[in-house]
Length: 143
Image (tube, rainbow, N blue to C red; front, side, top):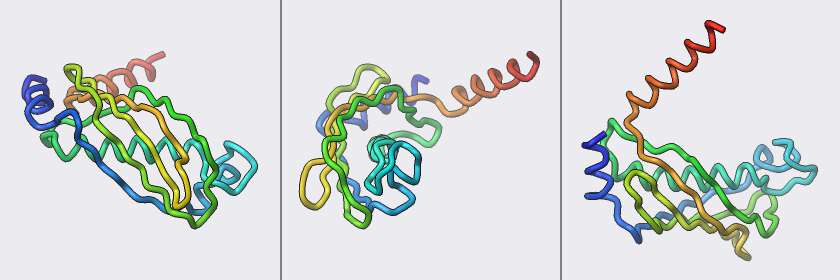
């Protein structure tokens, strides 16, 4: 992990940010995904957009053999967004603690702020991480 750890500190910098735009579709509503009964942007979808934006930002700065995994999401979904409306997600790298990345996050639709909070990701070496996951699956298959 030394190479990936070194690149975390050499390429990722506190203060970096990324903005990413999405458009709410019917397949992304609370009614469709089962998190509620209304045709508005589902909170689980909004959370996935936050994670996706943070993942993409970190990925731009990491070597091919490293990636990030989400470990914590703490967001307030503060306003409903209808189908067809655009949403801009902004992730801001607030803190780097060894391999732990902490992001401040927010999202706005075309009329108001709809989300605010934080998200944490860990930098991992892909092969090593997936080796542990496969070992876990093999152990479970034996039980």
